Amino acid sequence: MRTDIIGVAGLQKNSFIDFPGTVSAVLFFSGCNLRCPYCHNPGIVHAQTKDIMRSEDLWNFLEKRRGILDGVVLSGGEPTLHRCCASVASDIRGLGYSVKLDTNGLLPEKITEIAPNYLALDIKTTPKNYTKFLHATYNDVEDRLTASIAIAKEMKENAEIRITIAPDIITIKIIEELAQILSGIHSVWLQPMQNTVEMLDPSMQTKKTIPMNEILECQNILGAKVTNCRIRSGNTMSSVRGYI
Image 1 (cartoon, rainbow, N blue to C red):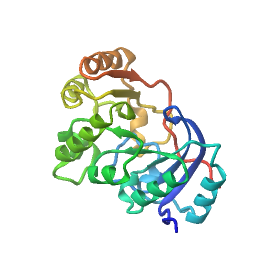
Image 2 (cartoon, one colour):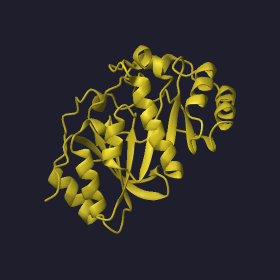
Image 3 (tube, rainbow, N blue to C red):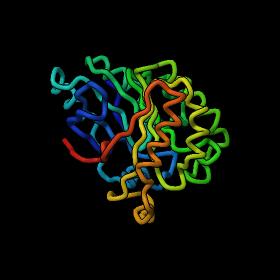
Image 4 (cartoon, helix red, strand yellow):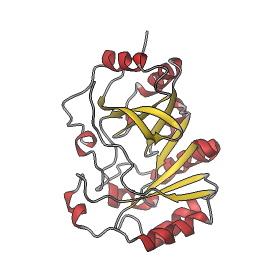
């Protein structure tokens, strides 16, 4: 008896970029415990998406794609908010898939429970700024992120840190602080903010994006502390699209 997949508001049937080295499907879970102003899935963040997909349809899809797809990405929103995710991940692996988790890392115990084959951890800014910029409601953000970063370090090449380079939320000084926090991480990706897509805070679209020379400076600062620091060009992050 498979676990009911509860809270999936979108499905990307095929992706060649979301799970490194793996052809995958992406499940987008609704709801989030942050309010990042540059988020490009506002309907999912607010859990306002009306179309919550049927668990039966999702399992049927994954059954049919065995041998065609190699992995499944649990994304969002924030998938770790959903109690079903650990059991769902186990059941997905039972079908022969690898599992990737996209998470903001504020629920490190859920990362451990889900036990992803690959982890993508979004670090937004320094922990002290999570309340100011992202409306975090936790009073122990630093402890939570420290635990999640430790998991990423242990996973080595099977984990990556993602940092969206957004005005105000990321500065050179903030990157210098993050470099100390992320020291020893295997892989960091810098993602220039895309201001041509729908955003949670529409005013972000009017802000000037951080120039490439500053992003390259960020890369150099982080590159001195981590094994690999690269820049992800263009909008390679998935948005909600595609239904069964």
